[in-house]
Length: 280
Image (cartoon, rainbow, N blue to C red; front, side, top):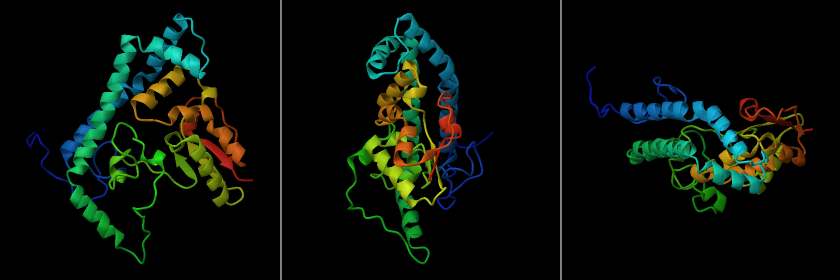
């Protein structure tokens, strides 16, 4: 196979979606095939080294907690004690170091790839602003809440401080008005209450508000909360622990939604099928 090792064949800015690769047609096109190959490799490495190992690592961590004579309760004090025990173990230290390194590699490559074509991308965005019979303008001088400027994941800045945030942060994640996709663990609990209240206000009767996000601490043990706190500290998730302890289904019901049957004992249910609140 012949070709440049540097992937010198750029993908057009106008080609918003590309047909190749594992996520072809879903996310914004990366500038070069070298970028595409690198990001695919890091994504596979995360799947193989992190996601595929979560169950055995969790079983190992729970065994360490049991050997240390610690209870399984996920309360904050016990989670701190468990963290001291777990992070003294070399295997777990390596796991979380690899996790951080892969996240940094993923984010840094996206920043370098799209950042190197910033002027062309900004020009394309400016051109798009002029299309159609009208436009919605975002006031760049509008005050931004402090929580919205918090570093998200290991990438610098926040969602509001980067004009190319749509292609840099989370690489294609979308949030909709009645479908909150991985939204609530990224904002403080008091803000979450206001968001839920606004969803209740705009929905018609019998309208559904679906939340796809992680489970709360009632469906967790001490290892799960340790993992969440490590994610909060190591992966730029400043509100994750607060979110887990708020138990979002409680907030949904407190706001006035009727919660459809939901099994909190299934740790994956919140992401697979979500919690669905129905406006009376």
